[in-house]
Amino acid sequence: MKSYGLFIDGQWVPASDKKEYKVFNPATGEQVGQVGDASEQDVKKGIDAAYQAFPAWSTTTAWERAGILKRVSELIMDHQDELSEIMTSEQGKPLAEAKGEVKNAANSVEWSGEEAKRIYGETIPASSRKKRIWVQRQPVGVAAAITPWNFPASMITRKVAPALAAGCTVVLKPAQQTPLTACRLMELFHEAGVPNGVINLVTGTDAAMIGDVLLADERVGKISFTGSTHVGKLLMRKAADTVKKISLELGGHAPFIIFPDADLDRASDQVLESKFRNAGQTCICTNRVYVHESVAESFTEKLAQKTKKLKMGNGMDEGVQVGPLINSEAADKVAEQVRDAVNKGARIAAGGSRRSEAEGKAHYFEPTVLTDTTDEMVIQQEETFGPVVPIQTFKTEEEAIQKANRSRYGLAAYFYTRDLSRAIQVAEKLEYGIVGVNDGVPSTVQAPFGGLKESGLGREGGKYGVEEYLETKFISFALDQ
Ligand code: ADP
Picture 1: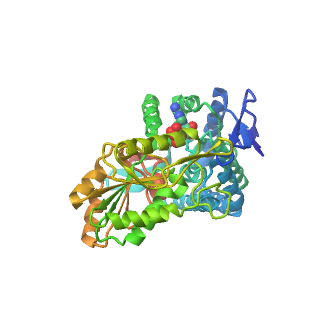
Picture 2 (picture 1 turned 135 degrees about the horizontal axis):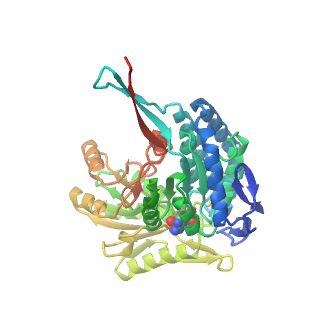
Picture 3 (picture 1 turned 60 degrees about the vertical axis):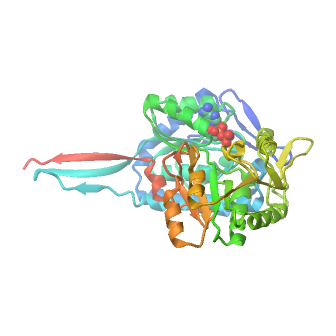
């Protein structure tokens, strides 16, 4: 059983009123740990520590920051097995996926550290012989990071690592459901030599209060949030009061188009991977498939067969590919979307049922394929965040693009074709921040990840991720002679 306090100014401290809360395993319902439950005062202490640490950290050299982040990355990989087990025990994803995520987290830290060395300025030709113009990049100050439960390690590193690389200090609030991975990561950042106060962790159950304290404080220069569109909008409104810089990674509703010339074996493999990874609980998961009517039957058959073979169960067990959903509300939402679709005429080609285990404490939904779906169904309009693929057919390329773009979300879109001209043109027409051409799993640490429309603001990953933590300063020199 893991037990942690709050990590403030390089120390583990109990929450000010000694409150704690319990963390449970979604596959068994058993308690796996407990962590501090921060009060308003604790969040302020985290900001105090980050604010005090900022002058020294922001004036370290890029080489010093890169060296420390390289060490963090190595320590994460040295503890890959341990971190993966912690993650699976609190989040439920299959252990092999957890290991992949830990590797991704280590890569993101290493890449961001290397980028620190390439935070360049500029000189611009002046309009007068007696002037010189410099443009300099500087860290925004204290950055607040609020992260979700679906990727308990990589959602943290993709915010914290670029922030530290830029010279910012951080107050992190991880998701209530998955704080243990965050706590262990804090220890590794500390062990690698991140100075006291540069990174602070406030875990807690009152997310709205923690968010409000972070947003109201003028010393916090930046907020980076990953989570629901609903909460993202709330934070954006509140950030306006102190005009904070803001990055938002919000919901998605990814379309996957299968053109008639697609390699159907590979396309169905990619849909499978994109959809059922993390039991469908990712913001870039395929959420709707549009398949050309001439290949619909064959594609659906292949996808349904492969879906039926997926092994569902406790992510710790050998060979499991689909774990439990995070909680009963998540399972209710998926079941409701399937019920709505079936009531409106959808047919079930695979799966379709909800399953409770561990005396009703673990919530599963079978990997599911629905056919004959229509735009009126909720599942075609809203993010599912669960293991269900609804399939619709289309006749023309124009119709497919129009259906794919008809969404308030704009995070990720995918399509399969062998036609090069079509590949280029469709990729350009899709109103999405990330487009996978014959690629259902495009996400990688060096590329920009982020969405259009109500899917968010800003980008994470690569040099773009570091940009989000930098201000641009124009320095004008007037010369005496
Ligand atoms: P999800 O539905 O995936 O849990 P949320 O948007 O509710 O998505 O949660 C993402 C993160 O935002 C979590 O860390 C959660 O605790 C936090 N959060 C939820 N509500 C608020 C809020 N009102 N203000 C600040 N943070 C919040």
